[in-house]
Image (tube, rainbow, N blue to C red; front, side, top):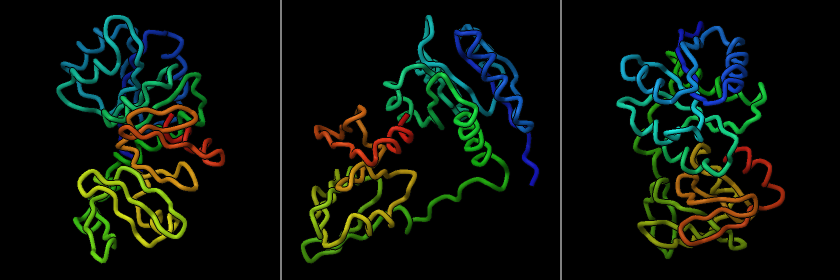
Length: 235
């Protein structure tokens, strides 16, 4: 299937960063770069009259940050943040950013982000809306069956042959099940294995470092064997 044409702009106060992204974009015939802006205010003026499908957006810029700029938009194009700072990743994903690229951006990593955008937006390739029976899981705990939405689950902890599911609405549910078996029932876009004993819901992350993830007031250790994949996913 031929991909339909998509448009994008680049907003970054560093001209060299814009040049590199444009060079990377040259490999994608289906994505047209309409302009690159070093001045975020000029970019906002452009976006007030023009619509684009995708914005490559820096975060630290003079006058207004990329996150502040995004909040001013009347419509929401797809956003791929491009920044030298890892610590804004949580804020970025809370704004439903499509991806978060840390400079210097390799072409391989850039291509993954662009292909993700193209696969999500090309006609015929949109992910299907989850039906109601796919938005929750049935958990057996304390001789009862609980209908728990994926959104309600904060994290899941392994207790040998049991698991403890930490939820916002129903508290802690202890289930006779293994972490590996429950992992297979969870949507991969929303949940992430960070340790042999922990699976987290990425939407409930408050903060993270290379060593642990904070959900609410709890710090969960990132296992050594999971660290590379976790950092790749979050950063």
